[in-house]
Image 1 (cartoon, one colour):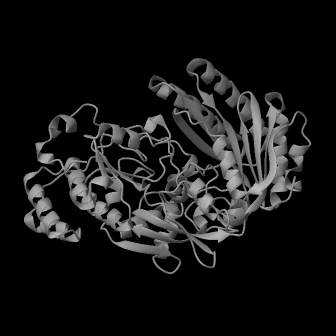
Image 2 (tube, one colour):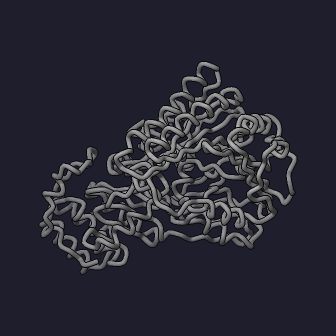
Image 3 (cartoon, helix red, strand yellow):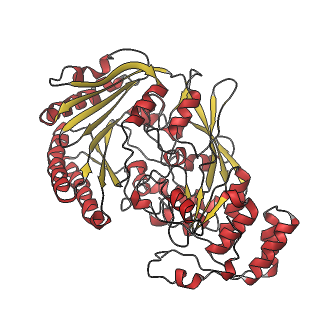
Length: 526
């Protein structure tokens, strides 16, 4: 980009525009010479660059364009993209999976190393600039990992290291990776990590939300396998968080969301899994009640074999079950109830590697962009409730398809007591077998946003009401499956929320992560 002088830009119409929705925009204030000198010195740049920054800061109103200009002066042209480069910034905006998040930022800053992340956080902290952080951009919640007027987007995509220790016990993984790359790098090593099930999901967001994996029944949530986090705090300092150093921060980052700083490296304990078995079976809609009962049988019996993992996914026309076993054993007995069902169509059934499974999952994901939303709810095991809710959901899904062309899923994910026991994290999970339900709904027109999201909300409302009436309700909401109006951190329990607030206050005493970010699962909103 060209190094534009922000004092020459016509900022006022933008900042006062009716389309600007930064209700949490930080109060701007001029910095005195002492503050400017201290800030510039902290950036550790050349004397020439420092002089340019001081001169610009003394004559320019404090705003996001100034932050973008300083980031460009410090990091360089290749790492900063502004709105003056329309094609480039549009392409970066459209990295986000959901069109609901295609909000053009004021600029995109793409650090290539931890030091640059530190410099950028010093900039936004000092200037009190609105910002967002993106790992993979898979969230469909607007502004969670996207931009908008007045927002500096910190894109971590270039922090994509994947290194395996000599003893193969720890994989050092950058937050800018997608899970398919992690599995590709580890494919020939004989080990893998407890990571995402969809290969195109980013590492950072999944880990900070807890992360459900194919291997979670054996080893716990993905975040439970983090040996160490490298974290840049809002004052620019770089710290480790592990069981011996900053253990409170280590605990908080395992599901506590983007409230404490920016994680620039995850050191993940590996697991001895490579050769596996996986299958996908399809059943017609008329067989879904029987498939739901088979799912209950798996929950109460087959899931005792913690090498097994099962995802139940229904559409209005068919039901799919995704079966994964962490050893190369064909047709494991854990899944016996599904082998016995009539009208079964085998879409895939094979021995293979973790990479093979990742590639297969990637092939099932549509490359066509759309508007997306998802929601989640949890309950105890209750087969009658599942059947009632499936019938209710299917009616709503068919109506949404007819009215808005929307496609909607019905997904059940079994959670074992072993998964819960494996973790020391803030999630507050019930120590009983239960399920996490989620739905993904896709549609095309922005004009239908409110109506389509209301359909999905009506289903979670029904889940809540009916499960409470049957004594099957659980409060937990899984952050990685939650929609913008839900309250996953609030579902962790009062004691864990209080502890998370205490950790945030210790490591971010100025509250930059709370007041600077314009979206995300933030403690300010709990």
